[in-house]
Structures are given as C-alpha cells and as structure tokens.
View 1 (cartoon, rainbow over the protein chains, first blue to last red):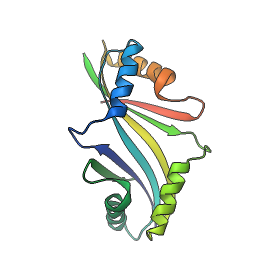
View 2: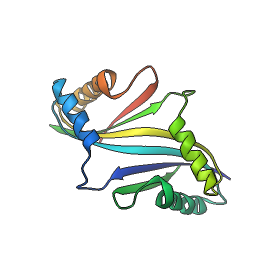
View 3: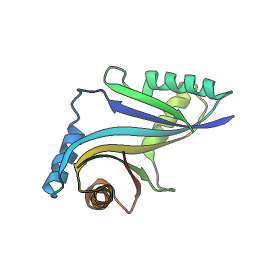
Length: 80
Length: 80
C-alpha cells in the first residue's frame, strides 16, 4: 500500500543555526521586531509499505541512515 | 505581545526539485521502495505584534519580501 509521510529534521536545542540567525538579522534590517528564527527541513515522501507501522519503521531507518544526523538533529515522522 | 509562527515554503507544483530527486535515488539505492520525495523549508519565527492578525500580515509581508520567491514557491503561515 502507498503511504505519504512528512519528515521534519531540526537542529537540536543549543546547536548554532547560522542560517536562522542571518534571516533574523535580515528581517530586523527590514524593520520587523523578530526575536528568533529557527530553520528546519521538511521532506514529503511517498513510499510503498505493508502497513502504517511498517512505513514508520522504514522511515525511522531512513532518518538514521541518510536523512538526519542524529548527533545534531531531532527528527519527527508523520504518516498522512 | 509575542507570537510564534511557522512558515513553510515549498516549490510550486511542476517545478523541478533536484534535491528531492537526489534523496529519492539515494533511498532507492538503499533498497527502499520510494516513489517520490519533495523538499520544503520550515522557519520557526518569534515576533512581536499587537494581535494575531497583525502578526499574520507582517509574516505575509516577510514572505513576499524575503523568505519566499513567489514566482517558484508556495508558502503557508501558521500562528502557534
């Protein structure tokens, strides 16, 4: 069966986020009162699996192997 | 008042997504039956605004001016 999933990877609390900092500075230069910007990446994945549990297991493996760096990223998996 | 918002920018339907294609190929090489990968960017923004409506208006301006390219991106704004 075909499943659609959403994976979000985000830097762990306390990790430097230079891209977010740059965006924050740019927004402040434009006159917006922004006190913090954090970046995250979202991947929308279509995959074939026997069950939703099976899909979640595979997606977790994908994150561990390829999509996230468990040392610096938190990730979440949402089956749609 | 302080608001937290989530902005998601994604390539419009039909736009080439080479990053997504590369991830899909890499996952297929690892043996996963993946039929599509689309990438999106999420920004978590903390900002000062008078009301939720005001915050949404400002965030929409930010997207138009800086955060998204309206020619190639769709974006969505969610106040938390």
